[in-house]
Amino acid sequence: MSKVMNDENIPIRESNNCIYHFSHNYEGFVNIFRQKIKPQYCVEDFSSFYGVSSIYNYENGDTLNIPLKIAQPIFCLCDIPYGRLSVHKKRHGNFGIGFKKEWGKKNNLNIVSYSHPQSITSASFRILINYFTKNQKDIIDFEKNYRCFSYIIMTYKPYEYYEEREWRWIPLYDDILLAIKYNGNEADFKKEIDKNQEIINSRDDIKLDFSIDDIEYIIIDNDKKDKFIEDIKNFYDANDIQKISKLIDKNNSSAAPTATAS
Image (cartoon, rainbow, N blue to C red):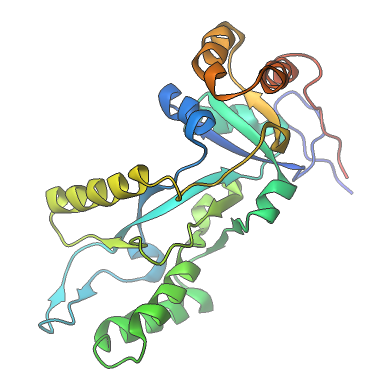
C-alpha cells in the first residue's frame, strides 16, 4: 500500500482516533471549557450544491430569485490526521481541542457526507425541497416531517470541502429553529440569526457535555498556557487542571503523535 506523506515526509494515517475542533477566537475557545459546547448558527450557501438559484414562496406563489442560504445551529469538528493539522489551523484558528472519537459516537455526532450538483443525492434533494416548499399547507405533520428532512440536509456539504472530513453535532431540540432561510435582506437575516443564537446561549439545557477524560489533545501555544489555565481554573478541580496541563504539554512536546501508515 502506498504511503501518504505530510509536509515533513512523515507517513500518516488517513484517519486517527481524534476529532478536532479549532477556533480563531480565544474567548470562544475558553467558553467551551467554561460552559461546555453550544451550537452556533453557521451560514451555508446551498445554491450550487442543489443546483437551486431561486426559492419558491408558498405563501403567495412567487418565485424569489435569491441564493439558497441557510443558517443552521451546529458544532463542527474534523477527522484529519495529526500531521495535517498545521494546514487546518491556518484556515480555522490556532486554538484546538482533540476529542476522542468514542466521545463523538456516544453523543450521536454525525459524519458529514459530500456530494456535487450532478449527483443522484443532490437531484433527490432538489425534488424534496420543491415538494416541501410547494406543499407545505397540505402535508400532514409538516413540521415533524420537514424537521426530519432538515436533519438529513444538515449532514451534507459540497464536495469541495471533502478534505475537512467533518463531523457535526446537531442539537435535537424540537423547540429551536433548525434552519433560518435567507430572504434576500442581509440585515433581516442577521437579525434573525442573532435572535435565535441568543435563545440557545441563554438556555443551560442546550449544550454538548464532555469531561477532561474525553479529550486527547488541547492545542494552544505554550506562551498562552498559563493564561488559559487561569481563565478556566474556577470551573475544574485540581485533578482536572493537572490533566489539562498535561494535555497541553503533550501537544507541545515530542509526545505528540507521528502516526504511521496503515
